[in-house]
Image 1 (spheres, rainbow, N blue to C red):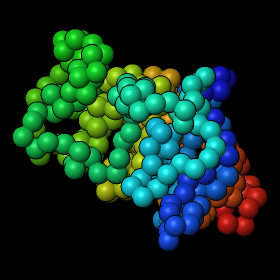
Image 2 (image 1 turned 180 degrees about the horizontal axis):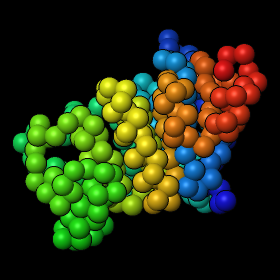
Image 3 (image 1 turned 135 degrees about the vertical axis):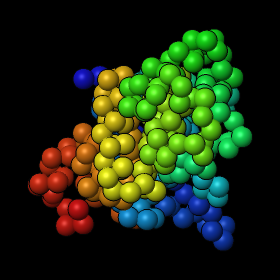
Length: 251
């Protein structure tokens, strides 16, 4: 397969009392095009911090202090802010934990799904709406032709999470980052949504990074797993190897 994502010797720091404190240290991993990689660890392990760095972004108070992040042949950390904004609009998509908080309650779902792609001039409104309906169908949403006319409060949490996936995929990104997107859902709905996510990601040939603290969840979506603890990698291997033949005591 084609290597798409390369992270090498990544270091992320914070300034405390005029001193540098490293919170992500010497993190390296690779991901082939079309694969799903999971960053897994307990709270504070650095998984979301690392995921955000793939877009050239650091949390407030943090900064990327070393290393390389490469998408295809392009260096993320060497790109200027204008280029990064463009990539975040159409090359890399981010799906966060709470779908409900991401939606404007006063606007119809369809308008919100196509809004960012329309602003970036990716396609016409007519074509984007057509693509959105196709994604609604792929994501197993009920009444895909008309669900876009509903408001956020008129659909369930699981449906809203899938609409958010459509919003992320509408621009046909190369990389999708899923940051614990099903945490707020009940277990049965989580399984349904994750199965749909994985099928659509594979169907579209999208490369994905999935952030989670839940190994059972990760087992359903990931080809590879990176186990993190206190900002360092403890293990990096295929999902099957991590689940059945873990090498590190922490794993």
